[in-house]
Image (tube, rainbow, N blue to C red):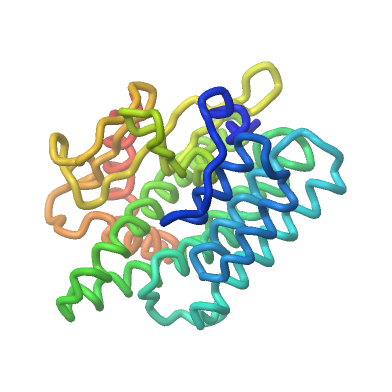
Length: 304
């Protein structure tokens, strides 16, 4: 079900030493068959930084999605959960309170934890998650997304440009993911068409031997021949506009520019507004629902 490193770049890859990017070197050595999955996971953990713990969790999720016995899948899912929780511990983020978050990977780790039931269901059945499972994951993801939005608003007010830019990308990804999941839940199509954060190999791009960017943030999977297959690959640009994204992407990757693609009247911080509207909709606010419906139509127009 996943486009693992072995599948995507093995033919054109060479082993790498650590150099300036030890995490990429570890992943590329896995891609070329120099290291197996067990050693790769341990090596990522061994790097020690919160960002490495987060990548280890995403690597474990991808390994859980690979064909194999259910016991092995369960082991990798448990490792993913442990790695995401360790990420939060290293960042001193309490998952049980609602204070603003100022670290992008902390917010994303919380959302990945909330989304774990989707992965567990898919790994167990080989199918996309049921509406019941997807609804729970979606609902539990709104609070950590709000913490990201509040953190972004705080650092903007403080004029902290570096932290703001770091949070901006994560906030855009969270807003796009939840808006698209909201659509599948509203249409009752979670078992046919379902978006999730991309796997590590889909999001981590190695420039060696490549002139075009081949990475994306959100993967929409659709059931084909009784197996979930990627049908949309979405790269989210939260603070850029067309013609100013800085990269050239492969033609099969859809670029979603949160602003202006999802902007409606009165918007300034589009991603933050989307998250706040999701919160208000959960409380029964019809104005928020109407605004989200408008944004959803705009999102579908981008996907085509």
